Structures are given as C-alpha cells and as structure tokens.
Length: 275
Ligand SMILES: [Zn+2]
Ligand SMILES: [Zn+2]
Image (cartoon, rainbow, N blue to C red; front, top):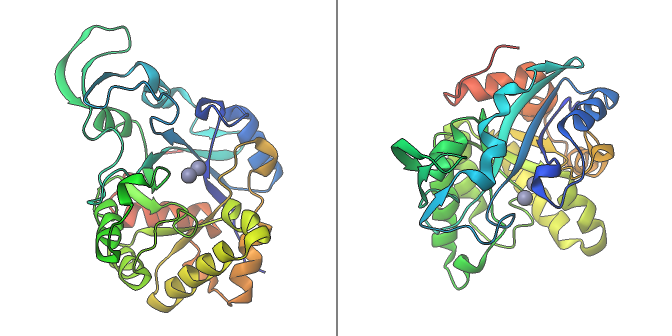
C-alpha cells in the first residue's frame, strides 16, 4: 500500500466555493494521520471578477499577505503557506504578473511598485500552477500548450503543476514531465480529478498516462486532495488505487512524508520554513 502523509493542495473559505477554515483543515489533517498540510487557496480573479487586470490594489488578495500569523506547527501538523495560481498565457505567465500594485490594503500608496503576483507569492512557501480558464489556449498547437507548462515550470516559486490531467488543455506529456524531472519539480496526481472520472473515465486514463510517464522518467509526484471542505482532507483512495494499478514507485511520491516533501522543496531552491 502506497504511503501518503501530506496534502499540499487544499482550499479554505477564502476560495469562496470552499467551506472550511484553516483550523478545521488542520484538525481534519490530524484526524487523517497526516504530517503536513499545505493551504493553497485560489490566486485567481475567479474569486473577484472585477479585478483590474492592469493596475490593482491588494485588498481582495490580502489573505495571502498575512499567513505568517498561522502557527507553523498546529495541532501537531506542519503547516505550509501556498497559493494555487492560474496559468494565464501560452508562455506560462501566472495570474497577477501583469497587474501593477501601487496601493496597500488601506489604499495608501506603496513606496515601491511591484506586481500583484510578487506581493502575493512573497508570503507563500510555494505555488501550484493550474489551468482553470482555458480560453487563452483555444486553437493553440500542442507545441504552444507544452510551452505554456514549460514556462510555468520555469517560474522560481512554482513547485507543482496542478491537475494537468483534467485541465482540458492537451500537451506533450513526455516533454512536460521530462522538464519537471530535470528541474526536480512536481507533477500533481489530484484525487478530485480521479473521483470525477469515476463517471467519465477519460480523465482517469489521462491521469494514469501522466503518472506512468513520471515513473518512467523519474519525476516526483504529489498526491493531493484539492479539498474544498475539511472531511476531504488527506483522503485520496482513487488516486492511490490508480497509482497502485500501475505499480507506481513509492520513492517518487514526494508527499509520502513531511521530510520527503520538504526536501523536494529545498532541492528546487525554495526556502524550507522552520517548524
Ligand atoms: Zn484547481
Ligand atoms: Zn484547487
């Protein structure tokens, strides 16, 4: 039986279509026997569609700038600060990278201008890059959509590519998994994708093919719930069933222990917090 002791893609009330607090998720993580929880709310204008895409304030996104107040170890669970940022262009730029921020959360002018992305990820230990809006990729060639994921992988704070098997944007799996392996970055196997595909089957096949390629090319994966409510935290029966069917090697599961995940973070140059 494959071990999985971290859940590093989870949502809280901040994500608007998710329903639990950080503490509820922490307690659920403890109950599920996890060692480490990563909270990765949506960093996307899906939450605030009136976001000005050129010049903005931090107000709607202030959740991300004060995560330092969370206990690093809470109820025995190590807690990481993350964000699930939308991939928004074919060169792999992320939401907020084109938005200049000149005001703080009270509306006062900031002394130094920066992008919304930079302000937000400064408070994050790592970023998951995922496609939710795929209109920008309509009509794109496979070479272009592959470049999109390669561009996202090249971003320093991006540690994980999120739910690539269900994003609905086809890409060259060999190239993207190969590049992730070279950069020691992580490909997500997402429980929610597999749960959905109990009904359609197609997503299951595409997730399984991605996992097989990771095993072949020695790319580490993360097995996450993408929980939007606390009872889902740490529960990945479908993902583990799929991985066991293909005899996925335990040593390539970066979420097998807190130590393994933190060492994967460190290998990519990300700072590992003290707990
Ligand atoms: Zn997502
Ligand atoms: Zn998510």
